[in-house]
Length: 311
Image (cartoon, rainbow, N blue to C red; front, side):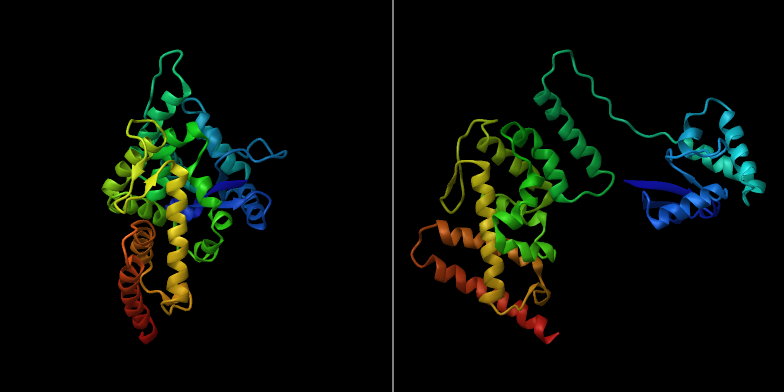
């Protein structure tokens, strides 16, 4: 468990990035912050276990204090600890008051009695996607986890769990995943490409939502057929194909096209179209597909790899 503290010196100076610090409970840094709390130099955000003098308050105590009593609590803390910031009580309380009374936007959803859990999840997930896409920057994969949750949860699947198991289910991806050469967004882009979609973030989520809706039976349409002519009967079928193609793409880049490892591959994004081409090569059934696709793959990758060696 981690604990958050507000260091009063940088807070009074307006350096808010330095003012808020976090330490794991029981760590040496945490113990130092507790000592600063006792000296009147820092305030924990929430309760700290253990017996403490009553004047040792937290930001939570100030937040919950009725009316003007927050000022009295802060004054008692500064005087009780002989804080070096006691002379700055007015400035400190004014700044804290703005923080404690900051208005946070909230999205309120009301459900009628008897609303099923699946309907609630289906309502919450799009709100999560829309709100968070305009606030804290999330990755494409983060958004997809929420966007596809209402479809995958009823059949016992979770996108993040599937990703976490990839190094086990597809051992050839363990190395590139650990070195961040293959990232969660990559498998989503491969899935989009091999089902005829775009890799652009603006359209990818909606495309995958439509594909997964059909594969999970949430909407009519039945199996999904790729432009290469391969029919996917389930979401796991599509997921495994994308992962397998990524696995083979990485193997070819390293073993066949001259890259010694991920650090020698200057354009990591090339693995996505390479994986999609491998799907075409496997599934099209066209005469000489492997040779045609392989020539294109090898030319592109060798040019990039040679550029990396020269630089």
